[in-house]
Length: 153
Image (cartoon, rainbow, N blue to C red; front, side):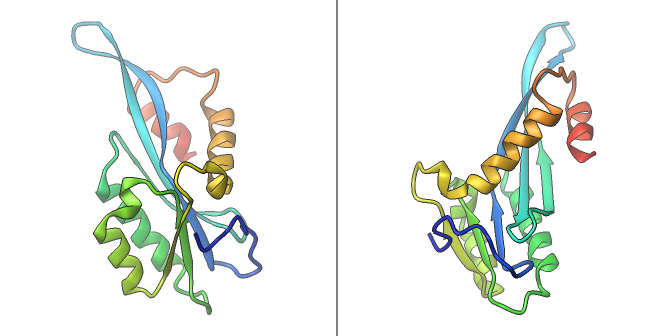
């Protein structure tokens, strides 16, 4: 854990945090049965100003969404004059060899929260809480596209 809960930085694009969150919605299938479905959001946030640099939305957790978001975040932060740090929890996506190798390729430090300690990534957890409060809780979404559209806006 390179961040050690020091989320503030005075340098744009130096410290980036990421995580995956899940949203549930209901969809009526061809037989008229209501099925619970899930949507996954994978954002990359700049700790300098809490700007979302890139994100991907998918119907299931998948490596491609994470890797595409990572690549976009790397390209967006290439202007940083200092060595960058990308922080996450210890989720499967951030332990993938492809993810770790991509960070090494660009000489980016990888930082991970301690196991089971969500406070080590509280900046991203707080963002998820605010986002869900604003667009999700108390609302009903009837399909993937409807929920995706709410997140995109």
